[in-house]
Length: 341
Image (cartoon, rainbow, N blue to C red; front, side):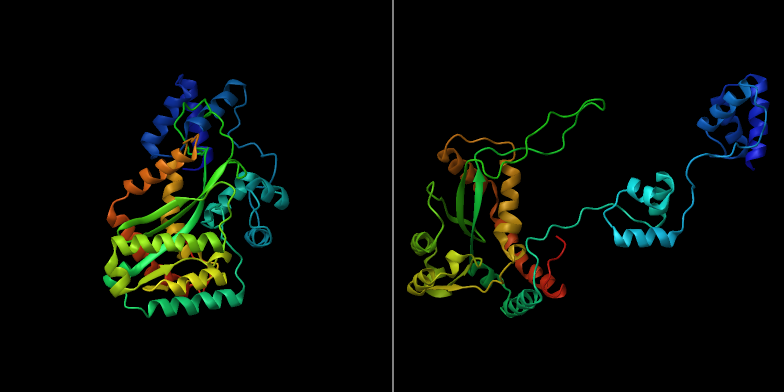
């Protein structure tokens, strides 16, 4: 049924005294669902009531409703972050037209992934080389149990909660100030493996995480491992996984590691937080755990850290460590570049 015939039927029902809603329902019942809609029926009923009994559609004003697909694709290629209003202005068409064509292309408006660094070709190649080297290890339980990973993270005393929340449709949630990255905070240093956290400490206020502190921490962690996991040190040899921070690469730190019998350093490619269990697992979960919490003292921060670490079951720590193999493979498959999480 064409538009002219639908308009004739609408006038018929209008003259019979039916409402626009009832007329649309009658037409759809006979001719099929979706033949006409309530909004269209109301528009035509208003025209009839105003004395306009012409069945033809009025010429539309405004911008064109069609555009050249190649022009749209070319514009998107030049300016992929343009919103639909900008695209409509540039192409001289209605915004709805742009939206329809984007749906036709099966395009969606997504934020780009935020990579931690812009890798050079040499850095990407090195990531591949190191990951190949790591995958040459026997990836069995014995290997995973040898890994002791460590990292550092700033913990804020005031942690903002920017999560979405349910509110009535006509209301907005109360505003939340963005996280102040210069607010009062404390540095957390943590060492952990497949069974959980081995040791953690908060760096004294004002002290930098330098080679001297790193060497002192290594001595403390080594003593704890000797007490709690003597077999790991004396027979298996622990594999220390840490990143390439200056304090870890310093000669003083290397000398200290050389003094600690029973510990080896596991290779780790530079610029690779997505290959560090603390970054992709432990700290990411900690951010959610601390969301909306406020601490008055460092003692409260320490207690909250302990609460978080103890909230995780041993299998959670094991799963995070074992993810390394898959992540090493993904880094190789992506030619050393960062990959989608």
